[in-house]
Image (cartoon, rainbow, N blue to C red; front, side, top):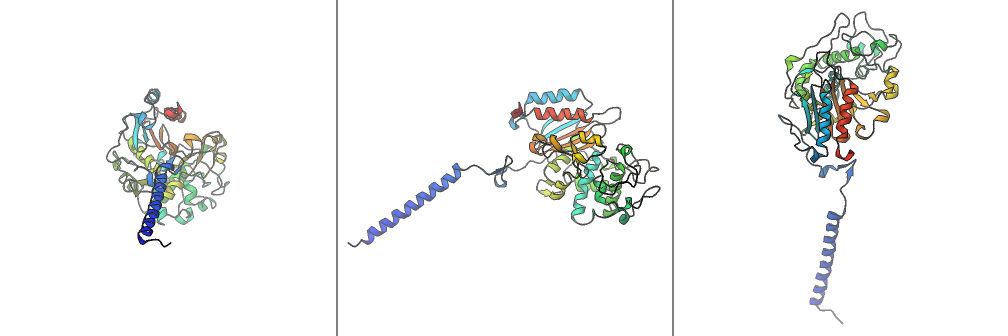
Length: 381
């Protein structure tokens, strides 16, 4: 029996209807039945909310509980800070201020946090070839009072900024581990870590030689202006040191606590600020990666601590580098100057103890602040 044209058309339409229905069901299943793809607790790029960056001022979190922190827990942070010499403290989560204490606008001395900031400033000039990290001191004609040994002038710029030069010439300023140094000429460049201000001050000189720029001018144009520092004052920055001991002064810096938080937040965002790459991303990673692991720190007593060393940043390493401290790093300065970045918590902590020197907040005390902030997380209570 032959099928009529009308019957054939009816069957064809019914078949197309079945296909279309099945396809719609498939799409609906995809939209409601599959989980979002995540990496380490963060939704993949297409579904990430836009990151928050401070403009002229920081945005504040009104209710800590809304971002997973206890108001009572943060009150304990405040009460503890009152027992210390803390003069300014800011905690940033997700680009907004979770907690602040003291005078966060006061400009004061950063001590050795200057070194971590110099490491950041190096990035663009390394990327464009202006700075060659493999240049030796001989290449740059860097010497010092009394001269440097032949083995010492073979140290590279990279050895300077990782504190592995093997040069134990006195620095123009104190505050390092020179007293624990082995004899001069006994260590080949690159083979032995020692926290040594001569290295760091010479790294400042090398920066200026290769870029042709004053460090403070670079600080202003390459960092302070792009991240909209609120309190930066170029005139407050002065190099200092005993130039009879060494030709290279310390490039001391003065920032406010809330601008220190901007420095830390730029690092947390891998050198990116509101869509603009201020520091090359790979460099932002590199300088907070471990170059000297915990077990190679010198003097040996430092191996009982929690830190390895990167490019002028202290990096949590060893058994303590877990949980909230996994991937964490910090800039440390005398008397109580700290910038700490905790990537797993999307957090930056900026801490200041303004000089005079008789007032200080030591690392153990500051660590107590970090511990109390972490304990204020509701999921940990």
